[in-house]
Image (cartoon, rainbow, N blue to C red; front, side, top):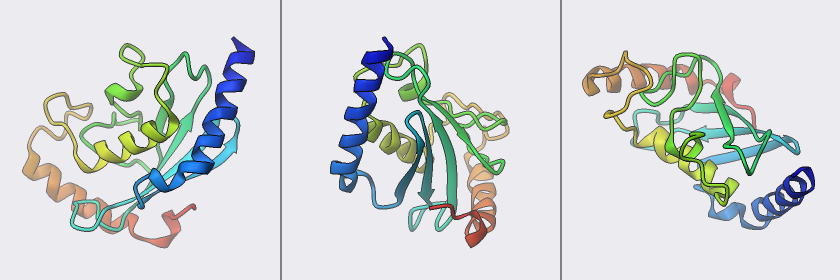
Length: 152
């Protein structure tokens, strides 16, 4: 499996390099090593996260057999993120993970859930009310607009 994993990672790295323009323009990544990336999402204009630097660590230990582990930094609050920073998303859930999913799809999917949360299965029970959620997210975005949160 190790040989397979290395070949797949080589392929994913090549695809990221050659097709990075297919990522949403507000999504950037930095490779730390073969199995670890930093993902930086800039809050989209018009969203409750507008202008915020949203940072996540993406660990690919066990990839592609196992789903990536995604953890957000800076105590980022979101209805689909557990209080300790772990993302709750079908795309990276170990029960629903599909090993053919590309890193480009993972990175794009994370951006999608940040800007279009699902309230029917909240990871963060503080946000059962969408009005409270929207108000809190706008306040949080003000904080994360500061350049000190920018990594990439």
